Image (tube, rainbow, N blue to C red; front, side, top):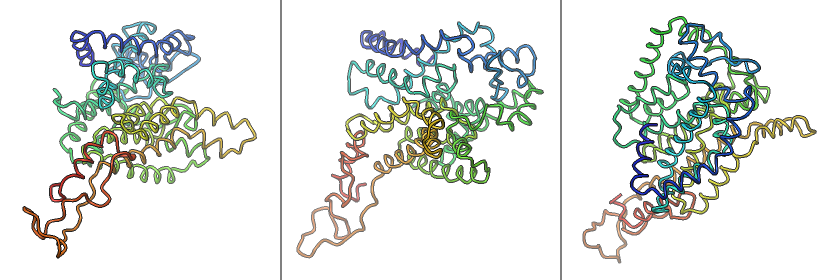
Length: 452
């Protein structure tokens, strides 16, 4: 957060006009969202932020964290690990209404920072006016249902996204890589899939740093809140109904989709978790190995939603990263159209449309499939990311052949070397893998096979 603010201050000092215009564009596009959700009825306002704040109060006053419920009519319990309640203690010092404004501004600033980083291949095409593009893209993204639900409920999802992104993408971090993912995992558990990816992609030291950080914070919480820690890890963690009705429309995880289909079987769920987890992690590892960490982050973020027992719609804040991966630098029209389609899909309240179909003559199975729309789309997006990554991977070198008898050997080329002509099947710009990959593809196509 402070790093983002410092960079914003530097940019304003260097060339204030584009940055101020970008902030104005963002404010105009998102002001309505903040106004509506921060001035709604008190019993509907920032209900998750109230849960965090109450947990901080419980940690300060010694009342049982996991037995306390927020005020009526919500009556929501705290569901995160005890270290989260310790981190929430400062929230207890600020009245909820004022805290809501601060929390919302923080989410918006983080979103601007995320967009400035992950959409850089696209926004830098605007030259000096790239801050305006950043403001416009961030404004559009905040209208996505997962992100605007994050504002509505006062959620922590954008913070989790920012922590994981920073651990992967900051070039010269002042912290050991893996530290921020460890913090995110200790706070919310589901980012632990990033630790698995770090390990499988060969970044063992970073994975161990993340594990050590998560374990250290958890043990620290045991020292500070021993009774609450024991209550969470040996009781509350194994009560998924504490999170609400698991078959609720908003639960877009694999398990939520199965429950709505009437398949309440742990065996089927675990089999699907294994299958989707294997495929998604394979996509992410291959992305990292070909130098596309952003695609890896997008794939693992989607896995964090799909594999969790309960994953509400606002947990799909990762869609902002997925769209960045798909749109690339904006030079490929097919990818731009696909990115726009993803934006429209997650802007619409499709799962709730499916829930409404249950009250019509439409067959139940159709309504349930529509209700699972975001979860099914997340699986499809793993396939899309896989295809984009595949387009970046150079094809295997052709087997060496002798030149034809009537073709003289060129200078510097032995009969055992392949021809310097482009390989058959070499990826060409303009397809799904074009755009930001065009320069790389053209360079590869113009080099001798032995030079790749």
